Image (cartoon, rainbow, N blue to C red):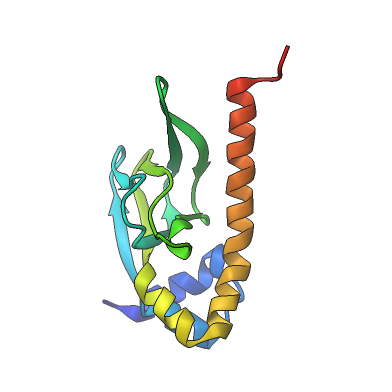
Length: 155
């Protein structure tokens, strides 16, 4: 794996903007290039959350399943965004599906690798949490708005 190229890509991705060089090197050690074709799932609800993704190109639908309704897209993410936060919280299983809407190029970050590095370097862990918590809050808000849209206001 060419880490020099990944190092540059990580530094340029908006999610890791301003990340200290030492932290960038630690994260890069857990990274790999990935590609998904349109219609391919990055992951499915219930599967182990073993990786998260920095989207470089393409769009990904985040979906929840509703009885009798099938998949409901609660958010679409694209270039410069991330997919996957369940790797942070035990039991480390995906709580929704992520499906490529078109060809997606991304950097996959191995969750176990990054959790281990964060456990060894709490400053890294704190820096990552400062970046992931706003994403968690935003995704919860998007899901809340989707629920309001589905159920509407009471008559």
